[in-house]
Image (cartoon, rainbow over all chains, first blue to last red; front, side, top):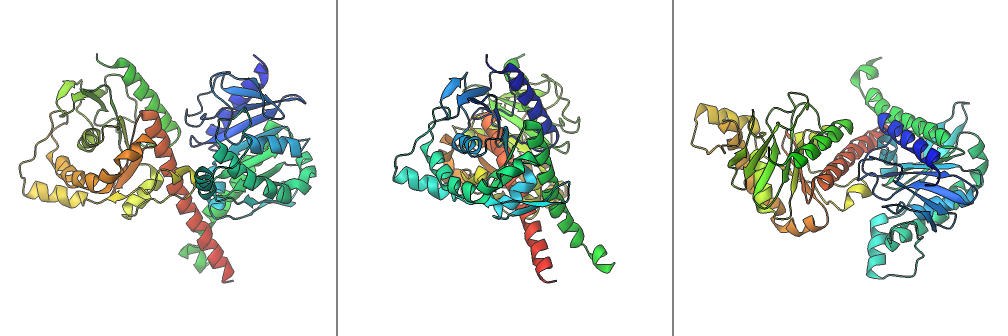
Length: 233
Length: 235
């Protein structure tokens, strides 16, 4: 089995994501660049299986999405986006995707989040918009040629959605590659969830935790600022 | 003991429900169809015992609700609802009931849970079935009338009286949606009470419960964002 140490590390990161309420069982994905030629990702349906991961529950693919090592399950449905992130950002070493609860509320409203970094700089977490359901339904009514990477399930309608997101990804994050040397980059996709990329998986975890914390603070703060008690002070 | 594998699997499901904060210790129920003739339900009071469940803490019944195997306690209070779901929907093989926190807020307001994110789009709307629980129970105690308490349940005729108000609403809301179970589970809340999810298997029911809860939560959080934006735009 290839990359057992990295698989073990990702299992541990998954446990910590759950323990810290950053990952739930409606979906999510973890991916690592394990060598210049190979990527290691969690598999399709891992959330449905409630993240009970073993070493087998990962897939190794090359940078084009061809399978290098696979066990029972194929790679995640978001494979096209993952491939593009690793391709677009050579210093990206890890990608995390989650339906983390507070950032999902911003994503459901198509809101950009302003993220205050530890050095007090502010970066943006843009929301990429694709009308997921409409695109899928359009595709299924009138299919057109799309290339489905071999490492993902044969879901051309999901690839069609990704193709709507990719140009936005380039436009909104393409010029911000140098931020990967700092705190990482992130975006949400409309009504879907949060994706974070960083130079390594620990930084990606940390960035996700910070984004969620700020989203939570804004939302919980809304209850405080709206309270009568505070209005009287 | 019948169906030990199924009991153990349900114990794993209960652990995960607690882990993912989908069930709390105020109530809930898990149930599966074991085969064409037998159903397996968690026992009454499991949540009071904070879900420290063991393989004994289940009741096996037939499709009419007659006890096939029972240990210390009878089936949970949601038994009649689950029995109705198993009987009315041949594709339904699993039922989950919980007082999950965010969907309960919608149930408290008699509001349906609409999809707030793609993750719940396929499930469609989750209606709220209305029965004035406390009022029905109070009326029953004031003027008891004959109700048939299934022998799988402990003798709680007032609960049966409430559930008898809910059962006809299941047909009304879901009778025309039966075929959806070929693709995904279905869910409803009961007024001021909690959520029921039913699906082809217990893993799907779990996943669909998580989706409804995430959607309810997202609605609540996003309305907080909108309110704050609205307040701040006034300053």
